[in-house]
Length: 399
Image (cartoon, one colour):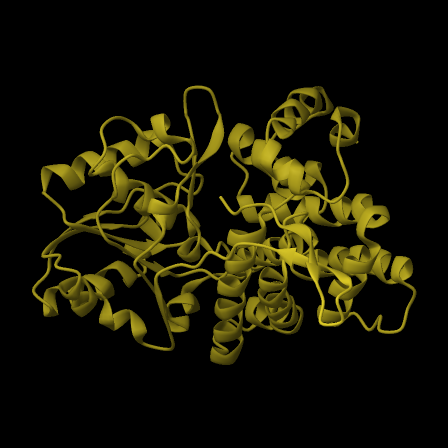
C-alpha cells in the first residue's frame, strides 16, 4: 500500500519554515500503448523467458474471437498456451483457485490476463498462486503473498478498471459473499499492452459502466486523504478525457480517437487509484457486488453523485476543480456552488449513459431491509473510508 502523505517543516531559502508535502510514488511495469500493440504479446513473453503460459479470459472474449486473436500471436512466437475462458463478471476465489490448478498442471511459466478487470484480477492472483500454496482466500488482505509470482502481462479490453496498473485483485467468496482484495506489490504486472482496437467490441452499457468506474477512480483519488501532487496529475488527465470522450465512446463505439482517449484515461485513473486509493463510493459499492452480483461499474456510477454531495462540505475546493476538468462550465464559480454542480453534472452523465440512478433500478432484489447489513459491510472497508474526505458512520451509510 502507498504510505499516507504527510506534511513536515522544511527550511526555506530565506531561512523561514515552509510546509512540504511528503509522499511515495508507485508505478507498474512497462506499459505499451497504441493500436495493434497487443500483437507483441508473444515476443514479450519470450523476452521474459516464458515458453508455457495460461491465458485467463472470459466467454465473451472467446465468443468475439479476441482470445483467438491473442492466441494466434502466441503461436507465431512459438509460445505454448492453455486457455481458461470461464471468468465470471464478479470473479470468485473458487474460479481463481481452479485457474491456478490448471496453470500448475501445465507447468505454466507466465500468465496473460485478457479482458476487463475481472479477467485481469484473476490473472494477477493466479500469477502468485502458481508459486504460493493454498487458496486465493488465504491471501485476501494486505501484503500476505510470501513468494514472488511468475511473470504476467495484462491486455485490457475495457476502459475503466485500471487493473493493468494496480497491485490488487478483487475476489468474492461464493460461500459467504465476502468481497475483498489480495493487495500486494507482487501482483503488479510486468507488462501492460493498451490496444484501443480491442475495446471496439464493448457494447454501450459496458463502455458506460467501465468508463464510470474510471471516473470514480480518478475523482476518489483526487479527493482522497492520500492524494499527492503525483496522483493529482493523473487524476486531472483522466477526468479531463472522460468528461470529453465518455459519451462519444459509449454511443459511437467505432470512433478510434474516443476509444483511445478513454483507454488512456482508464490507465491514468488507475495510476491515481494505485497511489491515492479510493473512498466511500467504493466502500458502498462493494457490498452491492458481493451480495447481489451487481456489476462494479454500475454500482460506482449509481453511488457517486450521492457520495459527492455528502463529501462537498469537506472538500468543496477539490470537487469544484473536478467540475472544471469534467467540462461542466463552472470556472469562476464559488467553490461550494461548483462542487454541488459537480454532483449534478455526474447525475446528468449517468442519465445520458442510460445507467441506473437508484437501487430499485438495478432490479437485483435490494430492499430497505437489506440496508443495515449492507452498511455493516461498507463500514468494514476501513481503508476506503479512511481515505474519504468526510467520515461516515452507519447512519450515513444507510442514508
